[in-house]
Amino acid sequence: MRGAGIFGLSVAYACARRGARVRVVDPRGPGGGASGGIVGALAPHTPENWNSKKAFQLDSLLMAEAFWADVATRSGLDPGYGRHGRLQPVADARALDLAQERSAGAARLWQGRADWRVVRRGAAGAFAPQTPTGWLIEDTLSARLHPRRACAALAGAIAALGGDILTEAETEGAEVLATGWEGLAALGEAFERTVGAGVKGQALLLDYAGPDAPQLFADGLHIIPHSDGTTAVGSTSERDFDDPTATDSQIDALHARAVAVCPALAGAPLLERWAGVRPRARSRAPMLGAHPGRPGVFIANGGFKIGFGMAPKVGEVMADLVLEGRDEIPDGFRVADSL
Image (cartoon, rainbow, N blue to C red):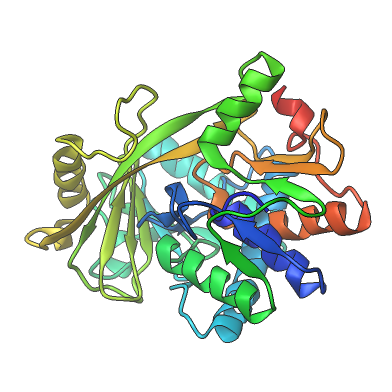
């Protein structure tokens, strides 16, 4: 396994659970790239216009609680998982009608295992966001975790199963390339075409405790209360950048917008400024499958913004392919879809 981000670790963990001998190699260590961030929103797409991507994501989100509980048990480390739902403001009457229509769609498409509903702001608790209509969308499928801690827990679970986490090693056996945005660039050079790109994001961490509060999505921001008494806000989306890990004044703008959305955050001290580059495949879906030019080599990449939510299912379908030769990858997620 090349790459110790969320896809590489999840694939290695799925393979190790099936008895395979695994080795994860990454010079930066577990979560050393974009997966070692601070936001951690595990949130669904809207319950409408159903397709294979949304169905795959639903399966993965429903798998997540058992998946992360098992990781925590094996590793002895807390990934910070909690399914506390999400609140979103309703902008106007048209948006309210659409939200109510989606409620019916969720009842059908989410198999009765989660809800999408419209609630009054006053009934949503102290952490509710500002909303011009007084109404909020509440879904009970969304969850959160702490990305950095989740990667450490996955690495610990792999080690508990006898796997190795190394900074460098030669390849033995099947190889899975889960090498993030740099890997997408290398694939583009190999195939002489654009297969994806890195998109930089900046985020911040506040000293505000709301460990059982729902996450918020408002004004394009994800606001995530973590189990450790901190709250993350993210993120920017920057296609052009010079320094992948540098932060700048855009953090201040994120902070101001977050306080405007959620006044409860006013006065909360800023603990950390973070930046990293997320891999975005050309298809905008995860890029999964066999490498078309290298027998015995596989690709798991492109989890832009949805990597942690997709990880439990990505690990399973890649383990099916690598260990058993069984291809359960849905249309739209295949390597060829980004070539």
